[in-house]
Image (cartoon, rainbow, N blue to C red; front, side, top):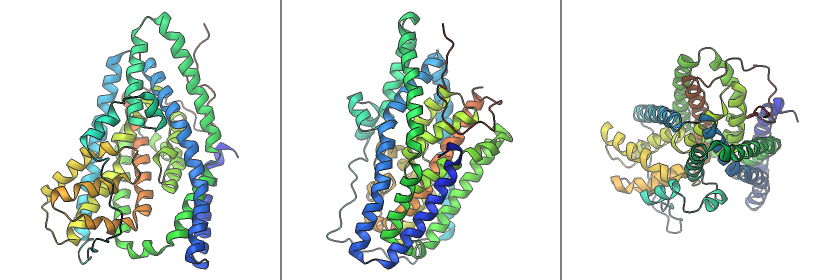
Length: 428
């Protein structure tokens, strides 16, 4: 399979997964449906495990090589501040769009909250705490963090490591940095091999969900899903316009390069699955590796635009279903709290549900409202993951432009393959 055709294969896998899953859902009994869905799920599980296999070494070597290429801690600080400024702005825009649309559409009016089921497992909110956030930020063991693919703690350790390597005598550090740069190039090549399995993983993920749930959740919650996706499209449009103001007409080429990462993120509901492809496509767009290697790991923990918007929809929806009137400022305050504390659930599956379930009781809203969201969370998660991917791509490109680290001569016809050595250095 040629890398240039990967996007088309992934799109075909999505369509095939929907068709095959729907046929299985309609023609099989309940027991058979679960068994078949589990078999389809093996494909996506295998693919996601391959992705997890490469994330830790890819992030660590990329960040260290990127910081070493800066050569100055002040440059790292400046890039970080610009990144957080963009992240905060994008998150606030996401929240405001979600609040405006959810209040205007009155999605929860007339919805009846279900009684708590006695045998229903509670939402695990143990990951939602300041203590766990600090645990994620400051690793007790980098080996443990790498084993668990805790990107945020790997990022912190790699920043310290990269700064320390740049600070010691060049004669001692350059050899080590050369080794890390070579390891990063090797990891990019391994990533290229793993991405060949993307269509199979995407097919398995989509077919498993449709086989098990069918299309019923889509019709039952059509208004909710339609409004949420409308909000996400509006956010995409705003981010696109903001990027156009910075990047000019080249933003259209960036949009084309995003195609495969967006499809992968949408189909698998996994930002990790899309990460290697984002890294590759940003390089093709001309973003310097030192920018992508630092910004993208940060973005995966702090630039969750899709999740922020969904939190706004979910909180207003549950409040309306419970008949509780909340002023705009009450809603906005609650969401600001969620935006800050949600950083403690990086890497937690269905993190949005965890954040919602932990925050509702604090503000006097019924936690039973979470049950209304579970039936469609898989389908919403597709959209919010794709939105996160879109926002991260835009952020990396814009910050690279601000830093003068965007190559305007990057060839539009460059083959869609990971370069053998993107950090090539002259031979001494």
